[in-house]
Length: 309
Image (cartoon, rainbow, N blue to C red; front, side):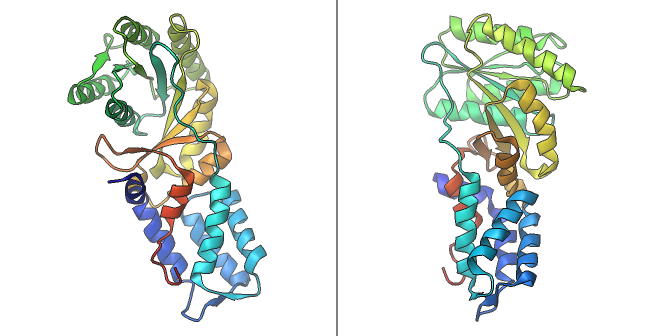
């Protein structure tokens, strides 16, 4: 599938809910844009979990352009899409690669967010770009995480650096970067522990990992990606704030987008965290990770075959 088809696949549940509910607001002869309509529209947008402020901005935009008029479905959709693209706008955010030597990418996120699978998908993406990759299994406190990452590495035919169970994550990170340098590999992806009980622990752990990496490459890590689970919606954002601050995150990977009707959470992420969304997970296969395109994302939230289109 092409990029747009894969985004459509990832947004299928969100799009179905959104388009069905918005369509139901209208009759064939159109609908008067009054307070009742705006309240109903507000409730529908909330369902996608885009949050209070983006929802109010969208409703206000419809009111500003159409209040007191009888309009058709397509007219409202067009206004929503223009405003959503404005809210979602971000600089083109490809990953920052090192000018020479290995590019080091740290990946963080709470357990269960899809972190390990997202790392495998990133590795697959880089392999597709003909880049050589090594993984650092830095979530040393969870044997299952190390084992799962090892299985993915074997499937993808890439190297992995592991430490003994319970070894310090910073040591594994150091060894992974060292391996990448010695073997002239292009990308080193370092996993980090997902379950840390306090922000103080989180800060300390991530700082040690960064320091160990910088002993060998002073400007690394070149990217720090935060994996969020799209199915948790708004609940994941408050969690993300701690990680984003502690780790110095440079971007978001939104996992499991295909598993939720709350795809509007991407809007909330952009508004509340202010970080670029760099990739979205749109399926379970290791190739189901696509670069995030805000305009394509908004277009695929709405069905082009809606009446009046």
